[in-house]
Image (cartoon, rainbow, N blue to C red; front, side):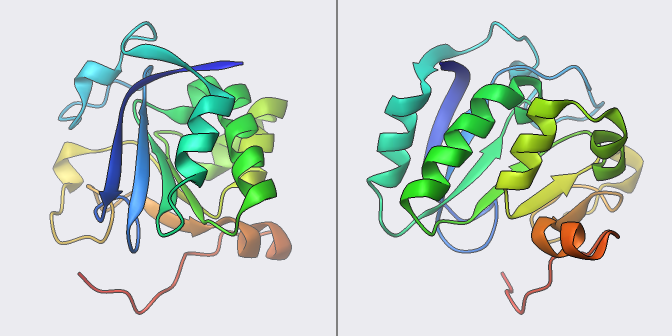
Length: 169
């Protein structure tokens, strides 16, 4: 199985807490005005990489957690779910994912691949970037409509639970 990716940013600190290896994927149909990465919109952008190869690379760094960004990884949900599964099977790394979809839209849509990916991540940064709500002071997101959702707590309670941390920049 392959993924289309644009880049892998190693040991970044802007896509979640601590050091993270961020996989920037190709493909996004949200086309948010003011998007920080419009080069990621075409589904054919970037290059193909084998999921197993990417998993090996991400697992080889014992100190960094993982973030899926883009583009939007939920447009390649089956392959990202496979990648997340391999990471979870072989490590205790946390996985964050950024999406222009809201959590509620993903649940309502009930797409099996997207639901599987959702079940394998720890934190979902959801919602489209909205230029009128842009706020550079927000932690790990660009506009105030976007949420940092603790997926395990949300699934256990049946209502959206925000990620809480004493982490500060």
